[in-house]
Amino acid sequence: MKLITFDIFKPFDELIHAFSTRIGGVSAPPFDTLNLGLHTPDNRENVQQNRQLFFDQLGISQTRIVFPQQIHSAKVEIITTPGIVKNRDGLITAQKNLFLSVQTADCFPVFIYDPRKEVVALVHSGWRGTAADICGRTIEAMNERFGCKAADLIVAVGAGVQQSCYQVDDKTAAFFKPAFLQPEGKGHYKLDVQGAIIDQLRNKGVPETQIEVDSTCTHCAAKLYYSYRRDGVQSGRMMGIIGIKAD
Image 1: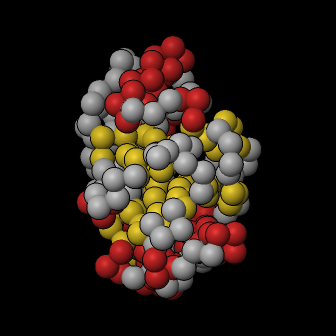
Image 2: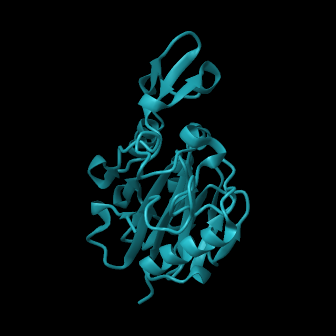
Image 3: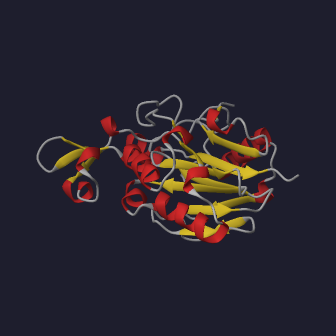
């Protein structure tokens, strides 16, 4: 099984985090092999087995996972118990042995850790969530509830569809600064969602030296990642996880 981890989190032994790839599971084509999305046309038993393999690899229990029902929003919630959370795309917790998850297939997973306050957050940031500043709202919520300071945050922005492969219309483009748009024909642009996310983190006060970015394009890296834009309904899902181990 191939999992992605981030160097920026390596100093923190108490932290468990990972971003899955499509490598190392049991699903048959076109979902081969580590599809973690239950709401895909894949065989449900295969997905459940894939999830168990994934969580076993991380050494965590599936009963300690938080699963948001993502709706491409900027809605954020403080979490204290495992299970399903309705209609949220940003999760925050200070509970140890509680692991936040998001699922993606082109959108960007954003992993956030405050080692001073021992608070973690995980964000599902597609274009809609990014346009509504979900990362900024998450940082604000961390500050309001736990007193977290942006200057203390350690952030990793995972892989997603990059600008070269992400064409949008002018209605979508209107939500973003010109710096993140590359004109491509009448009424169309290439959109840099990841760049906009990084810009929002910096604007909130997260130091650039405390942000790690995986610039891999999920659309291009077909052997490594699922991509909804590339494969449509035949796309599986990756999963991001972050949490603090119990003492």
